[in-house]
Image (cartoon, rainbow, N blue to C red; front, side, top):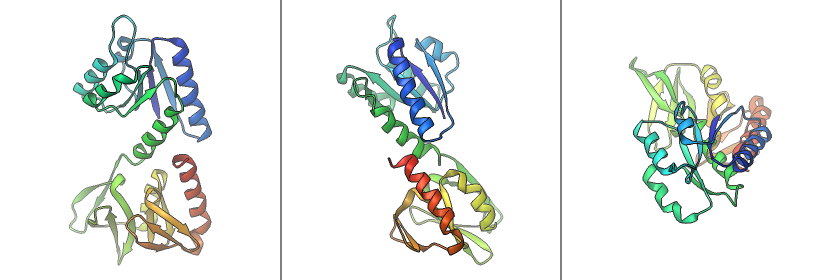
Length: 234
């Protein structure tokens, strides 16, 4: 994760940076943090995933205007506004603010990071070849599970759509495991984000489906599910 902090007061920059660093170290998340005391310096290289941006900057700079510029330039970074004046919160919707954080409650930074990482880790497209030989893209955020279907793979989406593609489930598992998926059976890979319950020998997904946990995969699944919950659900 690459985070940026634009804050003209050094004391607040240091406090926010310390919160982000502790969060990432506690959850074993690779990170890079760039800090800036002005919007002008940040805009020289605005390449970050998540930006913590003070609304009221020195020398007349306006954080809302800076966020609007980022949006107009097509920058995809999420913006968390920082301020001590809650009345500015109403203006955040105009620039698609990801979060609005009161400087007096910096514990909210952790919640923002939780939410951001939960979506970011699966913010990618899996490319595969369907049974007609056409390359298609599957949004991991919307993928519920993968299962073997004869000699093909069935990709089931949250909305019930199905994609039947070429491939082996072992290869699919290697591709998907780094992004919050777990092979829990020789025939199934599930999205850890959409597990409602995990009891004994089966998991219950958010659509009510129950999937058996294979004996050979039980220990690995328990570790992966525990790590996922520790990282995103606390």
